[in-house]
Length: 104
Image 1 (cartoon, rainbow, N blue to C red):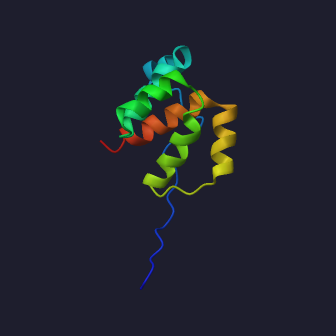
Image 2 (image 1 turned 90 degrees about the vertical axis):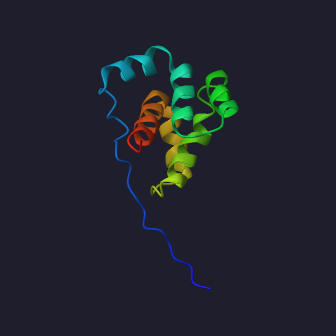
Image 3 (image 1 turned 60 degrees about the vertical axis):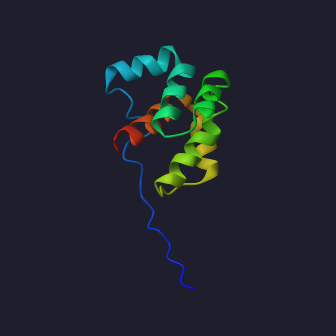
């Protein structure tokens, strides 16, 4: 059996690359639970997880960011995900949404 390790990717968007597009920035800042549900939906998560993102914001981001990293083979650690989500949940939500939006 041969095990091939996938090369690690980087996030396409920096954590603080949130000012563009302006509409998303305002949406994420003024209604973060709704934006988190939108980001979860964009990432292909089931509808009930998107609803949970809205209801239990920002706790759901602790699941969504590592899931996004896993799906796209993005390098990082669970510790980094927890720190980023704890200190800047709006930035994390926008980063995840932009990452998945770029794939469409």
